[in-house]
Length: 77
Image 1 (cartoon, rainbow, N blue to C red):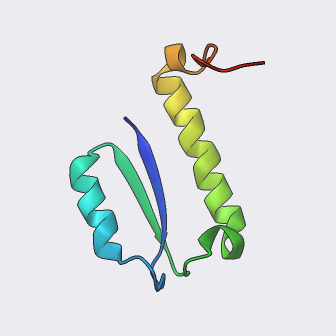
Image 2: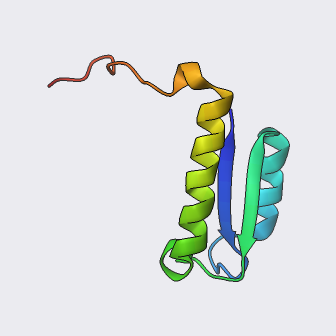
């Protein structure tokens, strides 16, 4: 499946090598490394949001039949 990874190169909890290993298992993964830390979505919100929106749009265009999810099995209203 398509995947988007946003990573902070200065994250003290997760090593950048982990991202590279995920790319081997997820060949359609798009990775973006920021000059940030663990709280990347707080410190780099605007560029991260732009990448997420663009990724979702591209994914929807590539798979238009998968963009309208039906009811979730077992879900209760």
